[in-house]
Image (cartoon, rainbow, N blue to C red; front, side):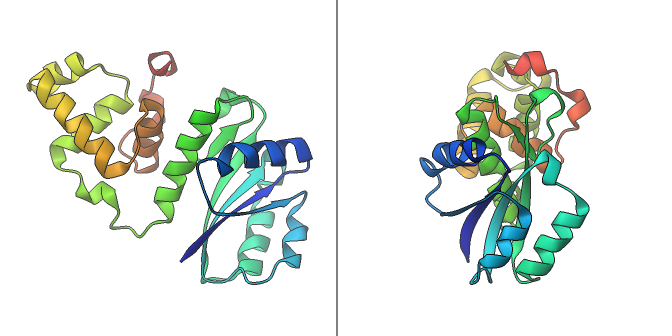
Length: 195
């Protein structure tokens, strides 16, 4: 199946800015729209994996129902909310003041959700899942080794395997991945440990 990104935001500078950041990494087709209703003008959006970026003001259940009705049941749709403040971010949102690398990592994790359920998460060993969980919680290699009663070299080896299997290199990306796969609860994350 083909993938497309749909960016719906009333402000052109945000639509084009997000597009400029994403097109460097993701070579998919992009559709940039000022409002949800403009999606009616696009045909040929069947049998696709769609990642829809919606401004916070447009992320309503009514608009999501409209999009699902318009696109049809055969499409797999994942949403990301575009927020203006990073204060109350969730795993399915980005903030306009975030660094491009963090936005890209969040999008990569959302794309993982578009894959079939037997994705790379199931390819991780139980020990790799343990290590990933602790990495996402902000623990250092030494702390992980002590908690799991393994050597630091083993931790490093597990982290290398996790990175290769998931294709995610940054700690922030691994954290988002762990949240999306319900490996950790966001209440247990200390944001200062991720900086």
